[in-house]
Image (cartoon, rainbow, N blue to C red):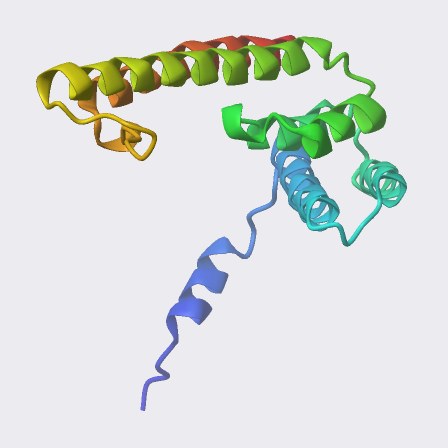
Length: 174
C-alpha cells in the first residue's frame, strides 16, 4: 500500500533545500525584536514595568538581536502615538529611552486639546442660542448634545484630520 503523506510532510519535502538570504534573516530578527519590545512597552504602559526596566529591556533586545540603530524599536513607540495618546507615558519613553526632542509633540497635544475644547464650547453656545430662540428652551438644565450634532461631528473630524497630518509630520521628524 502506498504511503499517504501529510500536507506538512509535502511542504517540508519541497522546502528542504531553501535557505534565508541575509536580508530575510535581518528582517526576521528585526520583526522579532519589535515584537519583544512591543511587549515590554505594553508592560510599561500597564505599569508593570518601570521606565528604567524598560530601558534595560530595550538595550537587551538591541544587543540580542544585533541592532545597530534603535530606530526600528523607536518606530514601535511612534506607531502607537495618535492624537488621543499624546500623553506622558509614550512621550516619556521617546524622550528618556530614545533621547528624542518631544517638545513639538507636547505643543501639538496642547494645541489640539485647546482647539477642540474651544470649538466644542463655541458650538455648544451656538446650539444653546438656537434652542433658546427657535425652540424656546433655555436654562441651566439645557445642555446641547454635541455627539448628535452633524455639524459638530464634521468639524471635529476635520480638526482631527488636520492635527493627524501634523502628528504624522512630527513622527517622521523623529
